[in-house]
Image (cartoon, rainbow, N blue to C red):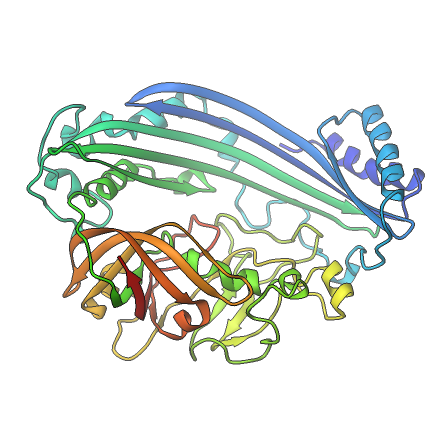
Length: 477
């Protein structure tokens, strides 16, 4: 819990900054309490508890600007720290574009920190024994698929894969396999962010999180090893369901058995929702005013223009009650909102903080996308509100991408080259894994070839990107 004394100490930092000679200031207190239980092969490996607490300061002194942070939060240490910080700021070059945001733009409705309903009072009642139980009971070594998983025992995968999250895609193989190792981690946390400034801003964000992750390594009958991982998370304990994490991680590993070479060429590509943010991130980066100011954006001068397919929307949805990763204000205290970034293929906004607004002479918006979301989209006879399997069926033949293993995207041109891992599918069915392939192209061109966006975005993720299907993607082996 964030104590009133901690809030008052943050407010007092502003008074100390003004007394030391700052013209304006912003102070941000972050407090994060986390508990972790790590397991190895079904046994507790490490138990960790930690508390991180710090205050960050943005100081505006004689036309100069400096940022500082400290975790020494007793009053006298803070006073000494702030005096030195103000003196240091005076030694920096002047930068008149730096300023606090217009108070009319800042959040007025983030008072208690609980407005989004993502801070669970149940967090404080979870006991150490319950944390250990979460970690152990959801281990593959604790009886995944009716006890069929046991270390160093070969068996056919079909029975275990049958309980996995996507059993309609599972492939029963001739090879047996054994579980070599399993690493798991249960964690829960409580986080607070209290932001004040000398123009009257005072906002509070609070959230809790419950998470469970497992990574499994298996070995097939030929001695080849494969790994698979999965995780689940929720801000509220009642919505936290880690029961199938081990099954999903096992499926990811088993499905990789027996990879085959795939000839290069143009294929339809289905990008799994777990990794599809990879092809959205370059768009969000290119819409940032900093990238535009640095002449490092392939979306410069595109505001109000049709750049993406008609019907495609990209939204920012930071204010969905009860869902993880929401926020009612950015780091400047500017209010967030649910709104369009791209609407019907037309670019609606750049991400412009106060500094970039003053530097470029354009209207400020928000500093970045808080929780980007792609609603369902389809062309022609593709199914509405589809999932991965139905998009594969609609595509017929192609390559399913389940992981990106390196590569890069040129922020100035949008050209990209990514190494991928996934599966060849025909007639909508997976036929074999593929590895060591590349996809190449241009981000704008790729999105112009979008066939469909599903309705299967994982709500526990910060970016709500669904499974995406594209036409005529260049693959090389």
